[in-house]
Each structure stands twice: as C-alpha cells, then as structure tokens.
Length: 427
Ligand SMILES: NC(=O)c1ccc[n+]([C@@H]2O[C@H](COP(=O)([O-])OP(=O)(O)OC[C@H]3O[C@@H](n4cnc5c(N)ncnc54)[C@H](OP(=O)(O)O)[C@@H]3O)[C@@H](O)[C@H]2O)c1
Image (cartoon, rainbow, N blue to C red; front, side, top):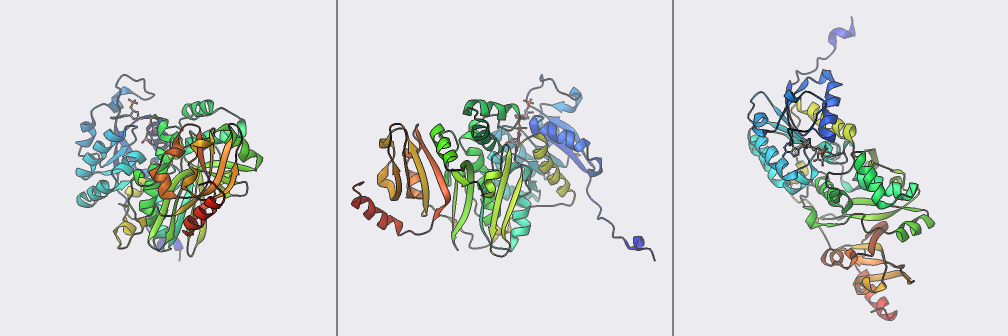
C-alpha cells in the first residue's frame, strides 16, 4: 500500500485580492516579496499613494490617489495599510473593517492610539485586523503571545523594540559616530520613521510596548499611561562611562508583573552587561525576552526594521488570512486582567552637567554619588510614580539610564531611604 494515497489534503484556502495603501519602504518591499511567492495566491489589484507625480518603478496604471477606489471595490477582500500617516491610516482601516474587509497593517502608532476601538470594530463587523509587522518587524511575537503563551503564565516581556535607535546606539558605541551622523545613516537605510522624533524620543518603542501589553497581559494602555523616553539625552560622558565598565546602553521596553494583579511597564535606556543577551543585539536588529512560569525564558531576535524584514511579517499576516486567522484577544477578554502600576521602584543612574538639576529629594535611596565639574551622577532608587509626575530628569543636560534588573520590589526603600538621606545630610 502506498502511503501517498492516504496523504492528508490541505484545506481549501481563500484567494486573496489585495488593495495596497502605500508604496514606500515597506509597501514596495511587500510588492517585491509577493512577486517572489506566487504560491500564496494573493495579488495586488490597486495601490493607493499620496503623490500622483512621484516617479515609480512600476507602471502608473497600478496607482491611484483615491482611497475609495480600493475601499469600494467589492473584489478586494484584503486591505494592506502601509502608509506613514497615522491619522489617514486610522480612517482607512476603520472604513475597511466597516466594509467587512480584512486588514493587515504595520502602523504601530495608529494601532496603539485606537486599540480598543479597532478591537470593537473587528468584533462587530467580523473582519480581522492583523499587525505582526507593527511590532519588532520580522520577529513573530504577536501570534506567539496570542497562541503559544496563551496558557503558560507570562511574568515578563522585555527587549529592544526599535530598530533605528538600536542602529544609532550601535554606531555611536562601536564606530564612534556622532548622534547626528548615525541618525542620518539610519534614515538613508530606511530604518527610521519618516518623522525621526517618533524613534529617537521613544514614542515608537512606547507604541510597540502598548501593543505588547495587550497581547502579553490583556491590558490595554496608551503610551501616556506609562513611563517612557528615548535616547536623545544620552551624553558622550554616559557612553564613555559605560565603555569603561564594559557595559552597553540599549533602549529597552519592559512589561513585567510585579505581583498577581499588577504590571510595571516602561521604555527607558538601560545599561546592559556584555554577557546579557541584549548586549549582542546590534544595528537594526530587535530582540525580545519572554519569561514565563513553565517554559522559563525565551529569546527572540530578528531584524526590526527595513523593507524586506517588515514585508515578511506583513506577508505572513496575509498568508494567515487565507485560513481566516484572527487574534482572539483572550487575555483581554478574560476577567481579572492585571492593572498597570506606577507604585514600584526603579534603580537608576542619572547624570547631569549641573548637579542642581538632579532632584535628590525624590530618591528613596542613593547608593553612589559622583560630583565633578560637568560630570555629576547619582545611582539610586526612586519610585516610578515620581518619575512619571516630574520632569526634572527630562531637562537638557540630564540623562537617566536604568541599571541591570532595575525593578526593585521592596517598597520599604522609601522609609529606609529617607532616613539614610537625612543622616547623610542630603535632605
Ligand atoms: N520602514 C520600516 O522599517 C518599518 C518597519 C516596521 C513598520 N513600519 C511602518 O510601516 C508603515 C510604512 O512605513 P514606510 O517606512 O514604508 O513609510 P514611507 O517609506 O515613508 O512610505 C509611506 C508611503 O505612504 C504613502 N502615503 C502617505 N500618506 C498616504 C495617504 N493618505 N494615502 C495613501 N498613501 C499615503 C506614501 O505615498 P507617496 O509615495 O506618494 O509619498 C508612501 O508611498 C508605517 O506605519 C511604519 O511605521 C515601517
């Protein structure tokens, strides 16, 4: 008997007709990638762009500037949204879902800003919205958080989630480039957002952490609800100190359970030791570490920006739609989802060109203190709520960098710390 006679048959998959919005770095990347995977049975019917006069590498007849040409076309069953304007993207995605069309998007800013409404629209119109490319580009993290970590209890998700800031930090540290030159290179290579402030001020990483929080812990939280900053304040003296101590500085996003019902979430620069998994993550690469009760630790690493790595994630979402895949948002829908807390303590390094800029009174505990002309720094423990409510650490000339394992659980630090500062005559 030939075993081939009993070979199972693949279920019939849907034929997909795509309406593509955007033909920039990722849109053009998707176009190329789709043409290399004919077996997928997905074809682009029309591409909507902003500027009709721009020179394109494919014939003009493929393009339109009229969004309705795609949205009202009954033969288009999937809208792929890859534009750099979050407000316009929101209108496009909303209209598509309302028409019952499935949507694939890579727009983390738009998704983080409208998460709850987009979830509701999917529910009432029965159409899927997939966005693997919006979070760490080529790393398949969202579907893993949804499916694999459905039952295993996650305690933390943390890592490097922004490719352009990681590229800039790598070039500053390893090649001695200036911040300005490193940013220019990241832009030329297509890693940076059209508005680079989104990357370097930490907004992009915060948008991704917002998406991760929803899929890892079922908690929907806008970036304004947690602590975050970018890499613009990191000074040469910080980089020199890190090098002297064999450390690297990385922009790290963290979502970590602090007890059964509360999560700490923040995006801040952090010192990482050479042997730390994140230290070896360079250039536009991203990496995520998950920590869970039974599986323990997993480390994901992959390209977090660029045309083809992002297009690969978009393509994977398109492929999943052939089998009607949808996120179920089970962790969000279950009862007792953990709350975001700002009542936890962080061990931080703060440096300043003028010692007066460091608000010593806010520290619960000061462990190290260095005072020298133009190079003053403090290592200490501070309540996250105080950082969230006060801006002294965001002044020009001040930089804040987390230490290794920065979350300090022991809230008694506040009282002990106050006493020690009084004794030392600091307050
Ligand atoms: N680049 C990356 O590495 C990366 C990685 C992950 C996620 N993403 C996300 O992917 C999306 C696209 O990024 P990108 O780097 O490809 O941007 P991009 O290179 O700047 O391209 C943007 C495209 O959007 C089009 N566009 C802008 N507004 C439009 C509108 N209202 N209607 C129709 N088309 C419009 C532009 O049209 P014109 O060509 O006419 O100007 C352009 O083709 C963004 O959400 C970004 O956050 C990017």
